[in-house]
Amino acid sequence: MNQINTSNYPLNQASWVTKFLWWCAGADEYFLMQSPKTDRVKYAGLGGIVLCTGVLAWISGGFAFLTVFGPDGDAHDISMLTTAKDMFLYFGVMGFIWGLIIFNLDRYIVSSTGKGDGTDNLTGKELWQGLPRMLMAIVLSFAISTPMEIRILKKEIDAELSKFQQTYLQGLNKETDNLAKQKKTDLEKNKSEVVFKLEQYSKSLALYDQKIDELVQTRVNEMQDKRAYGEGPVAKKLQQDVDIKRKEKEDFIKNKSADVERYNRELLNVENRMKAMEDDKLKQYERNRESANGYSGLLKRVQISHETGGAVPWVIFAVFLCLELGPILFKMMMNKGVYDYLVENYNRRREIENGIWTEELVYEGKDGMIHIEKINFHESEAAKHEKLLKIDSTKKFNEAIIEEWKSNTLKNIKANPSSFYTENSNSTTTNNS
Image (cartoon, rainbow, N blue to C red):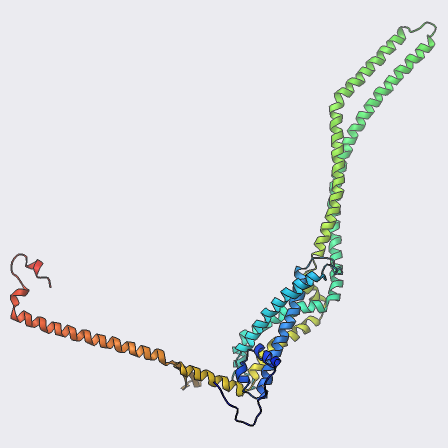
């Protein structure tokens, strides 16, 4: 389709930037090169909006992925979130992929949006027809504006988030302390019971020692009083009492040795459990800190943003909503220009060359005039007509053959009727008609 510009209007060559913006708007470069500057500017502007939306989606997606998949930490501790690896992976790669997805959706939405009635009036019918695309644009606006708002309000969000994390951490540590205190009380009770038993054992040994010491001292005194006569009967009796008491002590120690060993094991076990409990409490403090730091993700930041941001989040959303809805509404309000008629003319030529064209029919109904567009597929209609002719001809041929067979059969019956019937007992079998 080569056309020569015979007018006095100079159609200058477009730069690669302009052509790229046309591509972003989903416009056809071939027809825009033959269109006036007004059409070129319109579609370059639409493409620029689509491109800007994709770039902003890239930035927004990078912030979102960095917040969601980055390491958790204190709201003010950004040392783990700003490494070159994290920035490249989340902000660069994943954000770029997200930006391409949004860019492709916007490009499709804009390119598939028609001109409506071709005037600059925005009618209810046009809005109703464009409602699905506008709903998609609203959803995309939410998806792009949310990460941007938490980045713009980052300082305020971090301040509130830090307070929340500290309060949440204190609550968790308090629960940990209460639980540890309860466990410690139980362990101290068990320890006191074991210590009491060991103390009773020690007191029993002390009583034996005291009694032995008293007997020994009495014997010594007796020996001093009777030293001139040597060891008398009383001293011997006292020595026997000392030996008996020492034997009782040994028997007591022997009988209680298993219990004392068990008491010592129980005491050591309780002390080890108390020490382990303190270690577990310190570890639980660290787990509590990790749990508190876990509230640094996207959801909590969005919640804080809407609680403390006032009208700022809605203003940011409104800006992105304008970017998303603007191209759709603008295209509905654009008047048809040279570019649109060139595209329409080319499409109709291609339809006619392929045996397809439309008829515009107008009927008068009870609610007024009704406009109907009928699409005719002439090649398929011709094939259908040819097939019907073949079927009709085949039907006529079959009827003629049957009539000729019927005529010949009647002649044969009249000429030789005996060959077509029998009268014997096998007539039923041989005369099947």
